[in-house]
Amino acid sequence: YVPFTQMEWRKIALLTEDGYHYLIRAYHAQYVDEIHRRNTYVEIISVNNPLKPWTIRVMDRSFLHQDSLAITDFEVYLGDIYILDYHSGVIKFDITAQQTILIVGRYRTDSGYTKMGIYSNNLDNEFLLVLAHNHSVIEIDWSNQIKPQLLTKYSIPDNSHIHDLWCN
Image (cartoon, rainbow, N blue to C red; front, side):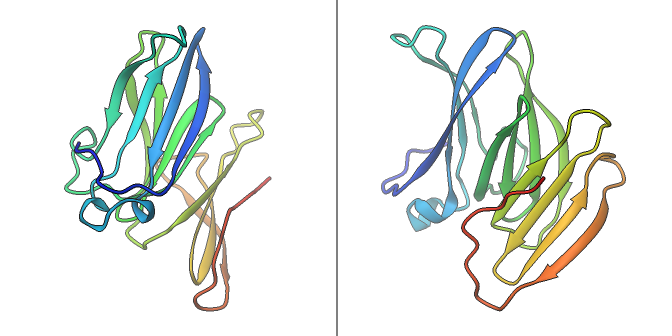
């Protein structure tokens, strides 16, 4: 990864997993300088000792074995980390007790989605994924990652702006 020469905004989340505390920082493609928009990344930083934080992993395009990574959304939900790549879709990560970062799921799409919402009741393995861009919103049952099912597709007026997605 390379440092950005311009950055307007980044998203930060906290995660506690197996007694460890992590600060997760995601750099979104639309908020960095144009030359680096296809090379964004997520940093996972251990903050068990807030006076001595240390970076465990930088998840960039080389970590994912991709030619580019343009992060458009990022969520931490029920102990997992989700990033939405504009070019390849959703990538789901987990941090093991040994502090190893594992890719545990992918929902592949090249449709240029810019926002993501996630919901699971954590009781009957139901897992909903909602993706949106400037003219549609889709709802996917991702309970079975091998055979995800499109539940609903909503059309919205062209060039609409979607600020955030919530689902339950």
